[in-house]
Image (tube, rainbow, N blue to C red):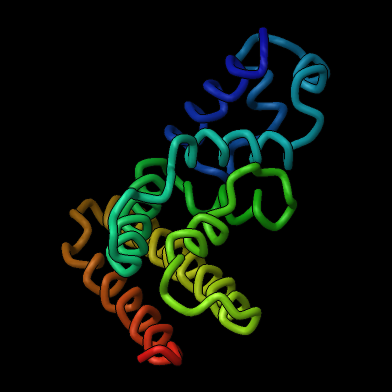
Length: 186
């Protein structure tokens, strides 16, 4: 047994049952070991969630596009896709961010994607950091809403209503427009 085996099993429990059922005890049972055996590889539930969050966000990078708006839009869509591809993915990443157990910070990536949006002043840098944070929280909230809609539809035996991505795109564009309006070079 190693960290990768444990994280793969955790993803399986997450996909099959959701975050509420992802406990160290259940994870150990699924691997046919005692819970203490997990702690040799992963010291806590928070560290487990951080590892799963890192797995969800692995290989997400700032797209190589010339326009900062296109980079940010593309990155927001990629992050949303990654978060919604895993049951309760946004909740896992949010918990890992809150506990500081993930090596991947969507806000930092989004801030990087905004490079060139403003001048190089310290005040502009602060605005970029704030915009990156706002975009990351918008994406996390949109992914959480999409998961809630999927869960509600599954409980009702129906399909989720299409079109929730339009709100995300509109929200992203509003933040980008607000940032652009703060550019003194305009």
